[in-house]
Image (cartoon, rainbow, N blue to C red):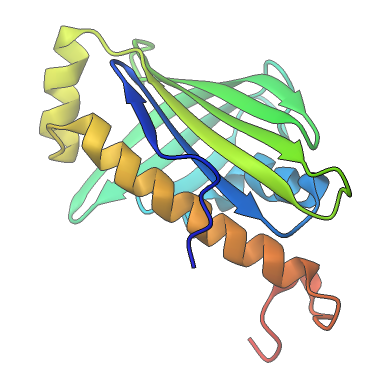
Length: 181
């Protein structure tokens, strides 16, 4: 069931999707901040690999992202900008030639009782005209705004399932794995 607190918003160069999740903000943040697992949530990401000795999301940590859409594959480079556990994860994405692509932000607000939270995923397009064309050729996506909006909805729904499963008091499996999985 989709439990969007506010509608999906779209502005030129910015998309925001918000979803309520029945799990503590720190748990949701831990799932999002483990960028090596992003492929479990995102329909386009295959996950990330930390670079330069980084092992977790901290400001300045760099990572390589792997993406796929059908047979198409491409890589990006990312830098963590904000890593505030339980509150916000934000990172910049660049091409492998270090040209700007996007800024992604996950803003997490706990409910008053702290047992649930609202997550807002924000995508800000930072591509210039050349990268828009090259990105379309590489990914096969020409309307990046619509494509990302749909992918963000899927990402948050998958994140919700993982966070709520791992928060289920009856689930004693590590990392919220389904019992018997």
